[in-house]
Image (tube, rainbow, N blue to C red; front, side, top):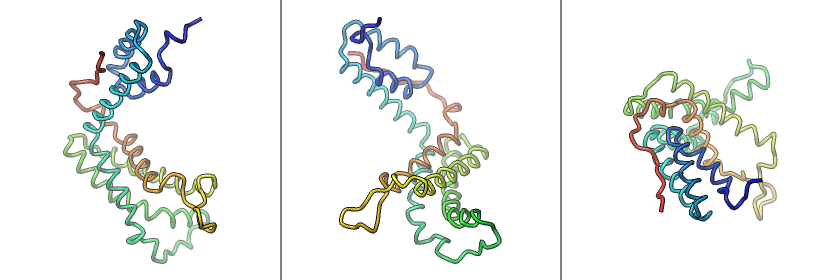
Length: 210
């Protein structure tokens, strides 16, 4: 039976394995676990894991900055879409059967926003020398799917809404709308643009072993 005191925190191990790049994961994990079993504390282990996770996150931003530009641009554009949204003008979707008519009516605005934001992504990919038409198409499709899921999930899961104190007639989202949109664009860019496979990485995250 394994002594729990000689085993590092399982949550810290999970975080390390999911944030550290694969080419350094096994060696770094083994080094940290060995030092922990030699007498280092759980606090020390957590500190090293947080250092590695932070460095990995910064490295991801460095190599994937076009995705962050895309997500920020999409979030800002979605925020202004209520003023420039074509949904504010009558749309004639009567030729489409329900629920397709409602789906088109609800998502034409986000589709235009995603299309506009993809141009920002395209510029970033060209600068980063990682441009692929397939990246743009995949990212656009995934963005629209995630926005649609977030939009219609409120109807399917009322628990995502919370009452506003002092206003019993209105409710707000548990997770702010802007945070949902930012996360949707980030995930779409991450899945649609696997740039990390093509990026040159000469340095990896290392923990400060003290």
